Length: 183
Image 1 (tube, rainbow, N blue to C red):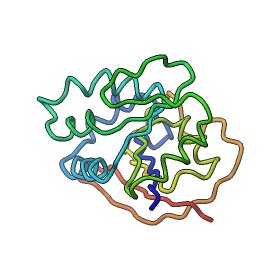
Image 2 (image 1 turned 60 degrees about the vertical axis):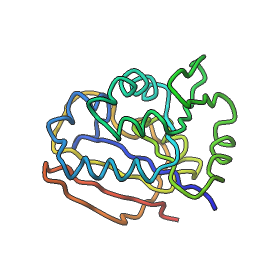
Image 3 (image 1 turned 90 degrees about the horizontal axis):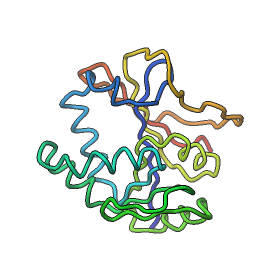
Image 4 (image 1 turned 180 degrees about the vertical axis):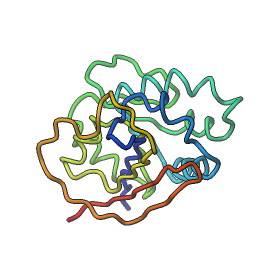
């Protein structure tokens, strides 16, 4: 069996993906929490870029009392961080992938058949999309125009066709758009 790589991204209407903790919180609802919980429970591992990894590693170990089983799952899942600058990955069960990124992630996909979840990590995701390694993209579009910040696919120079395979609207107005490769 092969694992699927699923990229889940919080995005504002104007394409901003930077610092979602600063603008997404008012739109978090019980049904969106269930969606994110199900997403995490169907995953065997997390795959993260350095910036997202460092933010998660700083936050999640301290959140088990307030966030319960979700935080426990975040803290115990195997985590792979793609970075050429990170020297140590101290968050429990973390491994650094510094070289041969595409080859190493291709090897990860030969696992048990469950999902490898990418949370955020837009630069990493763009590299993996260009290499044909992302199987599903879940854009969680928030009903806000942020105005400034890094936008999704900034600097992309190749068209990639995707097929919309599912949508879901949440109580707060967030919409999940689920895409798979167009090929």
